[in-house]
Length: 406
Image 1 (tube, rainbow, N blue to C red):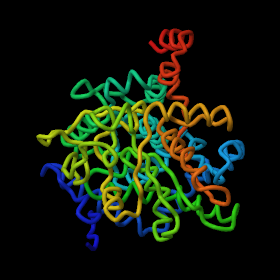
Image 2: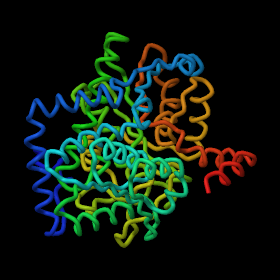
Image 3: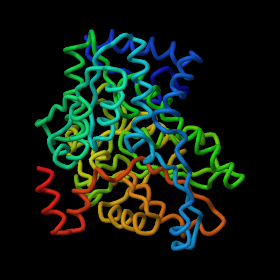
Image 4: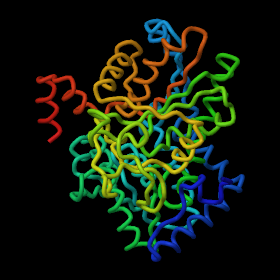
């Protein structure tokens, strides 16, 4: 099926209340003009270089490569961006678009807090009033990021409904936008939601793949055999995958949250686990984890950023096309991968990124020597200190951190 604007095969679209349609059309019109405007991209590149710190490095993971006795592993270091993750790429792009539209207030949702920190950061830079919706469960899990959002001047709104996680935060952000549609722009943080957000977020995140392509050609003189990225909503993955889609010999692997197991509801794997079905939620058509009677299922992941029942519509389409492979990593595999990375490479990956590392550690020995893998390290793990202390059952640090955190 040929894609039409706002659709990726049968997925995507714009399913929104009538009151939001003018704002969505305004956003689309502004985006269509901006993406064809050379000056817009020059301004984006200026801030990406002088404020975000791009290009992010491509680092050879020499110690893990030797330990695994297989493929060479390179790491795209989005964790070294200002604010510590890939989320700043999209936040910057949408901030410039917000400025063009003359909006003075922005809202967003956040799970792991990295999108919230990024949006709070650009709001401080450009002078926007900023409100961030975050589930109470995620606020408890990600105290360091909540602290920084508030210090940056954002109003962090706890969400107590539903599972008190990312899905529910998104619902509240949409309600806010409906109420304040005149002066507010909703900076959706992932490559999902109603058109034009999936396309727009992808284009702001493509900077990852464009850089990685140049960097690996410079380092190795050829393209990699595989690229691996974690997938929640899917923005870091679509960002690094897009510029390699036409290179069929490059395997593209998205890693979902396997949680405590794929048979029940203790995971967030739309493709690997039980319950992934076509549905419409939060303005777009895609694959969502659902119960037998069609309700959105509860999810679980050790990583707050992957604990979401849906996936971006372009990922659903790429899955149908079999161009991207989707697998999963369990919470235990993620902690194991995290420890291998920090102890052997001195890098501190976010728990989301550690999902990608879990797959790389499995795959590298199978591919064998002479092959090349790129892992997209989408974020830094400072925010996960409480979760990691809990997972390692470090009683001394758990008690200390909880005392300080509260």
